[in-house]
Image (cartoon, rainbow, N blue to C red; front, side, top):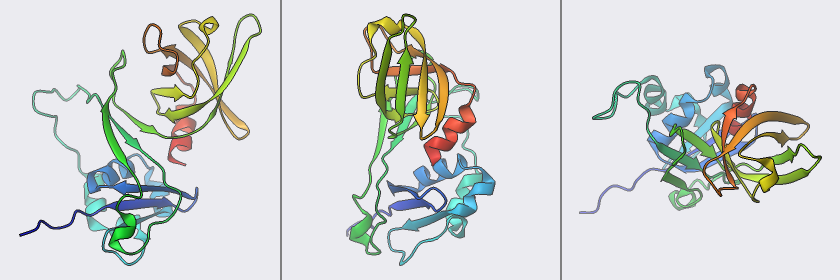
Length: 209
């Protein structure tokens, strides 16, 4: 006897015209918990088998799950953190209403993040402009491949003249955030840890938008 088909979910932010596809329920709950309660009314949800999109919290499983907190993992204390990263890939089109239309329209990857501070972080595939200025007037510009509150991965390697710890500007439109970054290891020039960000709430808004 065949097992029931697994449901996949999609979320859509009406205010930002932003969609995340190919999710499972626990991924949806994780994202909903990161959205400010006052902003959840802007979001719609859809899952395999549904004929149309519905307001996020009309799904009882999402509403209930977003209120629950899991106990510490076995062998871990309440103050220890998980060292896994969840990466959500944005897909630009709404899924079809048929089951086949949603499966495969997005991806979810779980991978280790071996950084010095080993903090957990949700990484989003976002392309922000990057600018780094050297002390002798050098200028380096590139774009991000993915971004989290704790770090970034760049399309191009940061030049050696930047040093191991340096200031970097992240740009989205006319807004920018000035962060203090550090390389994740010797010889590593594309993956950076964010050590200081005075505008973390703005970056969080960019990631969810």
